[in-house]
Length: 290
Image (cartoon, rainbow, N blue to C red; front, side, top):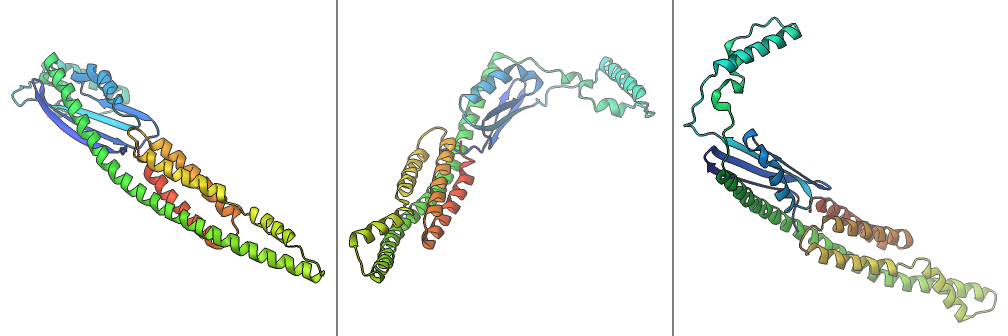
C-alpha cells in the first residue's frame, strides 16, 4: 500500500551548473503528471514525464527542475538587447498611454538584457546524468510514499479489526434477540388461543418464526464479514488498491445500513452506528491511497 502523497529532492553537478530537482505529489482521482524544466532542458520534458508515468498509477505528481548556474559563468550587458528592450518598452508605454520614463533600472530587471542569460547547450552526458538523478529521486519519492502508506495501512486495519469485533457483537445480540422474540411471540399467541379454549403448539411456533423472519439479518452479516476479509487481503496486495478499497467500504456501509433498517433491536442499531462511523473514518483515509 502506497500513499498518494510523497516528497523527495536531489541535485547533481553538471557542465551547465548545479541541477536542483524536487518531486512531490498529492491526492487525485486519476494520474496527473507534469514536469517543469528550465528552457535549456525543455526538450527532455516529455520523455521525463513518460518515465514518471510508468512508476506512478494514481495521484497528482509534480517534478520541478532548476539550474543553479556556475559562478564562473560571466554575464555581461548586451547593448543590442538593451536597445531592443528599450524600444519595446517605449512602444508598450505609448500604447497604454503611460507617461513613466523608461530608465536603466527597468532594463536591468529584464533577464534577457544579459548575454549570460542565453541558454547553454546541453551535452548527452549531462542529459544522462539528469535522467539518472530523476530516477534516483523517484526511488526516494516512492520510498516516502511507502512509509506513509505503511502508517495508513496500520491505522486502517486497526479500524477494520474494531469493525470485525463489533460485527461479532451484532451476531451475539442477534441470537439473543431471536430467542427473546420467539418466546414473546409464542406467549402472546398462546394467550390468544387460551382465551378461545384452543391451543396448537405448531401454529404458535410457525407464527413466531414468521415474525422473526421479518427482521432476518443473517445474510447481511455474512456478506459484511466476507467484505471485511476481502478488504484485509486487498490492503496487503502490491500495486494500486485505493479504488478497490473504496468500493469495499461502500459495500460494507450498505450492508450495515440494511442491518440497521431491518433489525428491531435497539442494541444492534447502536452497534451498526459504530460500524458506519468507523467505515467513514476508513473511507477518509483511503482517499490518500494510490
